[in-house]
Amino acid sequence: MQLYGTDISSRLLLGTAQYPSPAVLQKAIETSRAEIITVSLRRETADGSGAGFWGLLKDSGCRILPNTAGCHSVQEAVVTAQMARELFGTDWIKLEVIGNSDTLQPDVFGLVEAARLLCADGFKVFPYTTDDLVVGEKLLEAGCELLMPWGAPIGSGQGLRNPEALRAMRAHFPDVPLIVDAGIGRPSDATRAMELGMNAVLLNTAVAKAGDPVLMAQAMAQAIEAGRNGYIADPMDPRDMAVPSTPTLGMAELI
Amino acid sequence: MKIIVNAEPREVTNETLEDALTELEFTSPAVATALNGRFVPREDYSETSLSEGDRLEVLAPMQGG
Image (cartoon, rainbow over all chains, first blue to last red; front, side, top):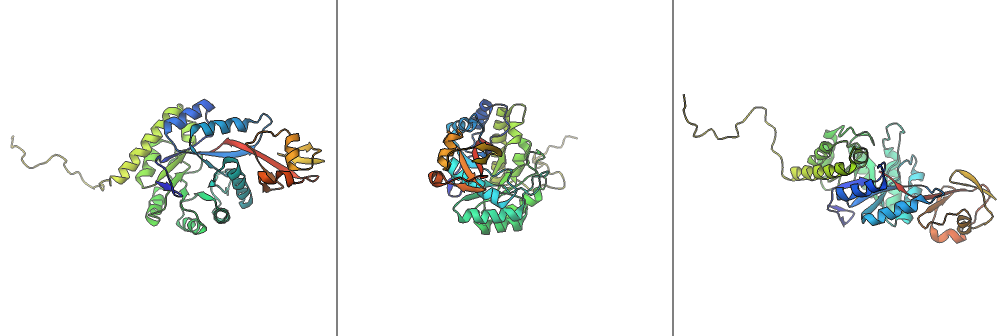
């Protein structure tokens, strides 16, 4: 798939937070075969811990997608994006403008406004949004070239709360890369998202908080690939009644 | 002068952002800064002067989703 003109072969984008240790994170990145990993910016501590993490990121060889997680206003998100561009040396930004602390749902009005400002400033914006079609249209008008609808609230692991809305997005935006961001809990959730025609899945907690994050990273990669192939292969339509799969012609008369 | 650095009151004697960062022992190149809510590009550090009560944010790479 192409994201902002860049060829990306892995359809799994992996978050880097909440792993039991840096070593497990590193191994999970490898096992997932992710090419894009998400990161954030936080206050530098006295021990300069940010520099160590930056070293791990560089060693991973992955493309970095910084986020604006935790930003509740347009200004915070825009300034954070500017700082991220300098710090990580990329104009990619996962844009989050959070509207509610409990649900972490996007403030879609602020999101569209921040997206417009950042796109005009040369950023390649990955907007974390809802599955609302009109908001999607506004984000594209603002200059976004892809959309990242949520599956369920961030970190909830509930899977796809509204698969029909994602199906509608796929139909409404046939040529826009759609990445399900947030809410995936199990490999089957990721497969389902891909079977609906999503182009990729962005995961973090589902891998980091699994009992075995490294094995879950592998399971998610396999699930995403299976779902993508299933979508491309064009599944049969369900039928109301049974239809024999073994030919009935040529049956012997045995009674 | 007293400024607020990452939400903590600090005393600095240097007036430019560049020198103040050294004084505050932010020596890692992997940081980005904002002064009073505005991003300050690295190339502007030497010409950015600080005033009493300024709010300085110094951010570093961190794990994120």
